[in-house]
Amino acid sequence: MSATGHHLPAEPEKIVSIDAEYLAGRRFPYQEDISLVEHVDLMAATPGQDLNWLEDVTLLEEEGTPAVFDRYSNSFVKIYFPIPDGREDEIARKVLIKHLQSGNSYGIALKERHCKFPQPQLGPWVTGSKTVGTDWRPSVLEGWEPPAH
Amino acid sequence: MTAPGQAREARFDARGLVELDERVPNVAEIEGGRARFDARDLTTRQINLELRRLIYGEGIADVVVANPGARHSLGVGILARCRIAFEGSLGYFACGMIDGPEVTIFGRVGWSACENMMSGTVLIEGNAGSLTGAAIRGGDLVVKGSVGARTGIDQKGGTILTLGNAGSMTGFMMQRGRQIICGDAGPGLGDSMYDGVIYVAGKVKSLGIDCVPGEWTDADSELIERKFSIYELGTPPRFEKFVCGKKLYNYDSLEPSERRIVL
Image (cartoon, rainbow over all chains, first blue to last red; front, top):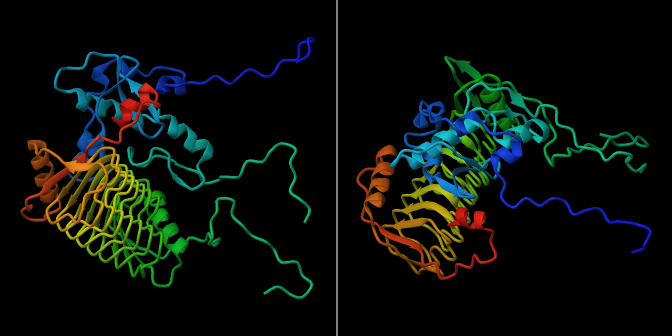
């Protein structure tokens, strides 16, 4: 390294625990207000005659805060309101479904930009959501041209 | 056919599709919110395109596919709430990566049926090949026949219910979820499983590494009775429960948040 001040670029920031707020850049109202999730019908939100995939969703904890894991974006959705005793998993599931139905899961944002095949933007959580992925084109590196052969 | 001296146009799809014909066949008969089409003369991609047109485009929630002809990779990646019935057997990778559909397959399926399934229900009337429900993350997969080797390999959630027997290494590297096997299980059951539960009503040829008998609870009885009731499978037999012995746990190198998910 010369003394004239040539510096290597700084290491990229490394985030160990990713949560939904970090990915979205904001906190969502249903993380702070239980009344916004009380009405969520879990049975109606899942296929089949029982809770289906939500059976595996339970209340966890992230950085000392109650949280539910969003498998569609590999992130935690923290819950800031007091959770009534005995309703931990139910509330966690309701927050998660609200998060997915609201289209706030980061995986849904990625769909709009990157999905390669047509699919409903809000997946199985909202009936009749718009179709995304109808016009996917491979990204091209700036300045690159295909070989002449 | 390319004429002599004429350059042949090279076609490819950057998404990796082998079958480049993207024409939607538009052959389904739609009546009263239900659709039905005959797949006998359609290619694999045409069948899947027709399914997507009906479910995503037309908003049809009930589709019947006649004569699927045991083609591979049918019904994959359907991400919507709907009902799909295949009137016949399917090949390998049937209904993989689905999220939401309730599928009935009136026949058998090849290997890797419902791999990476996220949610929904799949009912297979016949047998299923090896790797059934590989890496399944949620939903119910019910096989009325028997399943092959390594069923539920890398299972991360959901329930796989088999009325018949299960092959060797069933539940290999299972991480979460449930398997209910009403018949016998082959050698190496639950080998290297991290978590999850396997119930077996028949004989177990041998247990895999770190798979041990578990203690029966009321929650186990409730789960099995509920699933048998939902799928109208009659009175459940008596099961033995197997879980992870946790002797292979080595999570010291994991981040705390990762550890919480796994555990």
